Amino acid sequence: MGVAGSVVPIGSRWRRARRVARLAAIGTGATAAAAVATGGVLLGQARQARRTIPMAEAPPPRCDGVYGGRFPGPELTMVVLGDSSAAGYGVHRRRETPGALLATGLSRRLRRPVRVRRFAVVGAISAALRYQVEAALECQPDVAVILIGGNDITNRTPHALAVRYLVETVHALRDAGCEVVVGTCPDLGTIRPIQPPLRWLAHRWSRQLAAAQTVAVVEAGGWSVSLGDLLGPRFAAEPTRMFAWDRFHPSAEGYAVAAAALLPTVLSALGTGQDRRATAVRGEGVRSLPKAAQEAARHAGTEVSGTQVRGRDRGPAGRWAQLRRRAFFGVGAVPQHGPTPDTSTVEGLA
Image (cartoon, rainbow, N blue to C red):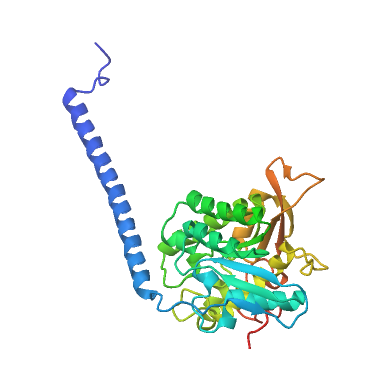
């Protein structure tokens, strides 16, 4: 026996259980339906982006050759590895490719000839670097510039796998005595043919991969430069100038901006000291490598390299890293209105 009203009849309990089960089923079904709907939207947007962004029609111009041959200094060999952004897809003249821009800038700054060999391939993912580096090592390069990551995002390569291939490449080059500069994954969330919510996911995935690349490259003894949304703000203001006809790859001016961001780091990696500034830019300094990588992923044009603090490579939070931001990028965003960033260090644009 019990107090009146304290016992719930069996029929009532069964009806309540069925009502809860039905509501739970409705909730689960709604969640599943939402997931399916979101997935359908993303797949639809991916298909639309593929239709909007034209397929590659012709290979980019070759940049191989000697630049600054009139200079008397010893010849320096630079190899260019990576994907279409490294190859210069989207431009039509050799002098507009990243390899040519960097080689011209290097030769004029160092007063010595620079020989360039390009092994980058349009459409390459990080797994393709193993084949590119095998060929590159035959040239006995002094410095390698690698631009990779965008196709890993579009192909949904697991970040850990993409980074592993990149680390193997950096180790192979460093073991051969070659300096390595890596331009990390660009922010695909700035590409206009990619619409929200796929654009938001592309933005997140790109930053995550760029940060992971930075940590891995510096740990392996290389230098990293975050490309991120380097062209994003200017693309919003001047889409016909900064991006090529396919609205996906940079134009000649876009590549000039990227080369201007990379060149000072290439000079630093070669130990020339020609890129040092008398005054520091806000946000520079020494960080733990994981923190430096996260900051670099948020601010385009940021260089990250290994350093020491009190004679030690590592601190409580991991390896120490030096973070530098180029003056013409300020805190990482190119102004939407105003002068074009200084690309005077990269010659041959006329």
